[in-house]
Image 1 (tube, rainbow, N blue to C red):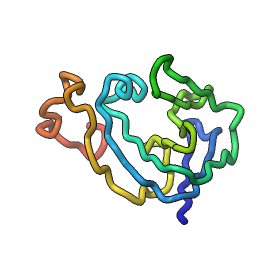
Image 2 (tube, rainbow, N blue to C red; image 1 turned 90 degrees about the horizontal axis):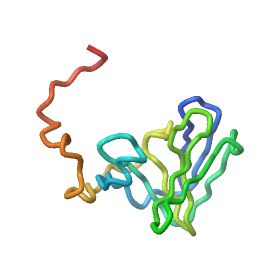
Image 3 (cartoon, one colour; image 1 turned 180 degrees about the vertical axis):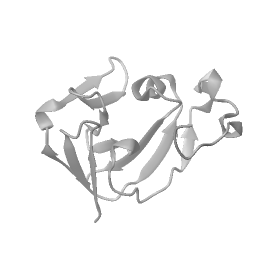
Image 4 (cartoon, one colour; image 1 turned 45 degrees about the vertical axis):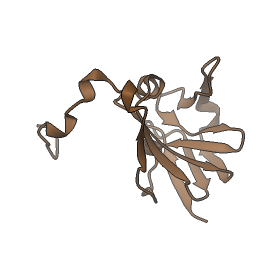
Length: 131
């Protein structure tokens, strides 16, 4: 059983997750784009496992989008995305992890819903740092 560790942007919330990840999806639906503020959500998930808040648990806020299964947890201080639990499923935003991710993304989801500006992103110039 592996242990992954993560934190929020301000560092006040720290967590660890003990389990193997089952899935890693890049979701382009409008809900994930809005929740991430980006082209897609990058989420790891697993059934079961143990999610432990090592610090800052009182700063973790949860939003359940009415009428849907969409759940978002975030740090109330810095707004960074954090793990959410729904039933026995844990969803962890990949960007919140501080340890290496043990699996690679396995699919893009909801590509018909992707942002109109997302086409041909792979043709843009690449910089190692801020130009």
